Image (cartoon, rainbow, N blue to C red; front, top):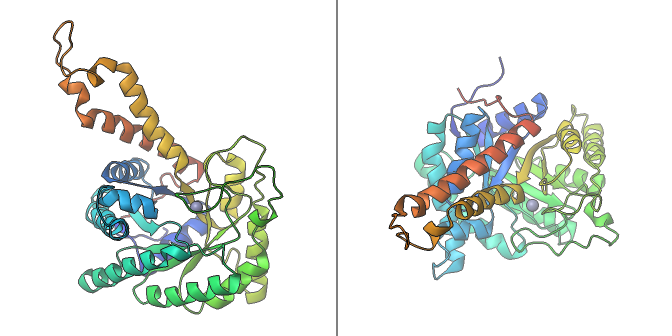
Length: 357
Ligand SMILES: [Zn+2]
């Protein structure tokens, strides 16, 4: 029998156990961006239905939305929304009977204070419960010189590793834009920067491994968002080159690095499988689940147009309360999003493989 974990949010050694099980088992977990309790609960429901572990993540904008878009201090909302979302997941995840990795998405140079403020809360939560609030945070300093990127990552990881947290870093640039971070993706340009150099990955490994747990968002032609087929060339073998170089230099076993895949929406399923075989344990999914959520809302409104114009039918007096109750359209959205995730668990090979017992 493989490793077993208690259901709920995993941090520290349990997080390593889960990531190692993914890499050794040749499967990956979907990392789903959430923005409120509806999307969180949809992810938990989908994971439970698929007997799969899952990664729940918030961007800074998603965290702000979680606290309420109308909150006057937007920077405080980004911190408090992240805390609120995490506490919601800590409370509920174990009752869904699966393991959850809690993570925050891209933080560039300007958002380092956001990460540090979340760590203030994370340390307080650790004192209270013996567990970090988040399993991991991401620092995306890929637009800065690599020396500064890595020294800043090392500084923050020192703090995180003390409470059993892991750091996700980015080397090379994922094309496209995610919640205001990153530039417009130019489909006609020479996109050589979209491919991470193995030497850079080795440098990160040498610097960060002595400090704590980390993962690398390596760029292999992946782009945020969905583009016309053919305009983006995914080259998963770039990941293998990095793994092989690190393994050679350090006499390590296969796939020593924890790799993550950004911009997975719309990817070819064969290339997803290749990426997973090269040590990718996490594939982000946002664009496709956003569409699944909204598509169901659009369908529900189109099927019941009068219920969104009148409380009572002006012609025959039918009351529409049962249709305009927001739970109706939100539930349709949750189910649709969970169904899209059914597909993701199958594509990534994680269906039926939860470590929770
Ligand atoms: Zn990303």
